[in-house]
Length: 236
Length: 287
Image 1 (cartoon, chains in turn cyan, brown):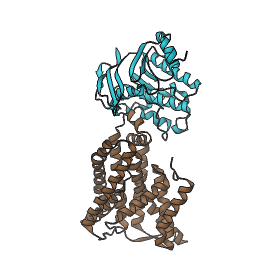
Image 2 (cartoon, helix red, strand yellow):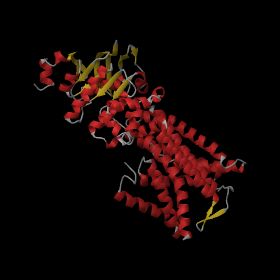
Image 3 (cartoon, rainbow over the protein chains, first blue to last red):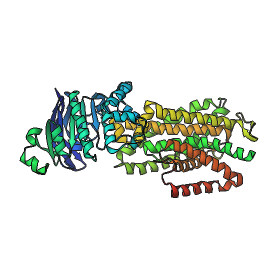
């Protein structure tokens, strides 16, 4: 089944067009990377999918249901977890409370105890420090917490924005290993990355955004040998 | 000795009331980004209304049941109408913050003049446990002890609400990262409206407590807003425990200084603020 389908999206910030006729598809249990330079429109695309930014035309479908006009707070109830850039954990709430916020919607709230136990199994480091405030965590640990919080709701689709941003190389590897383990659990991932090499090695397929439109797309194993990609993104 | 006990007990009593007002103000600012200059007018209207209600035969404790929900509803409606509109038309958060403050100045003029129109300079009061008891040699009016007890109940209940309930957690999350909270499914607009309403409710609770042991007039609004602002700056903008701590400190200092010279109380407050801003600009418990 097609998990996510984006059809011909155009989006403006004031008079500036940020997205030009962007279309993409993510199939079930796929890892798809959305690559591109700073300002290419990657985060804007995620924001239009989740309803945080209004698109001026085009359509978004999640599991063949339209997401057009669905407010951002309802998007996650449908089974989409969104990790904004930098994680945006709640600094003055404990790790446990941060995780609880991952199942804030009314229908999910009562699953919080089971969810927390599940996350402590996946991220044992968080368990040791569950009573600590999130502000005491390192950058990598905050990213772990943000991922765990996103996974609390048992999402079918995860949208990750710049997972590796600002992380030490060893944490980057660890974070991408977690992304790979999500696929084994049947979770579909759309990954926005500037770390093109890591993303290519992790994902099945990739879309390359340039100046707000899709410049290239294809299987990662093909793209990684593409001369243009090599030159523009991998510095080879 | 009895003087010291007197100052301490009265200081804590006033501190409880100041803490309530300041918690409301800091909630409205921390979550809703509204520096609500009209905050004290909610307190004034509630204090005056409860005097009128008690004089009409209502039990003083029952005036909580009327004034608090009324203040919540008025605050909630003001937020979802004018403040939500302002937020929509403001081009960014900083513009909204200054627009919202100007709007609350407007509300201050409207609400305080409604009070003046109805009551003029009249001072209202009623008798409620207005006899003294002796504690450690100090003479304290029973109604003030009752109001301290009620203030503490409100403060504890509010802490429980913020830290243990689902809605309370969503309020804290919104104040720390509104975008993050929205992605968790929190309805930001509704949370902001609830916080503005709860802020009004806390001011109204302080108003009823003031009506129990003081004789309020329609002019007490602004001075209470100013005290709440001082308390919030002292405790740390956006910090609820800071509001309580700051309230008690201001209460104690106010009582101690007024023992020597009442006219120096405000001077002492501002002196405290100046020293604090030099030493710890974030406030005592500010982030």
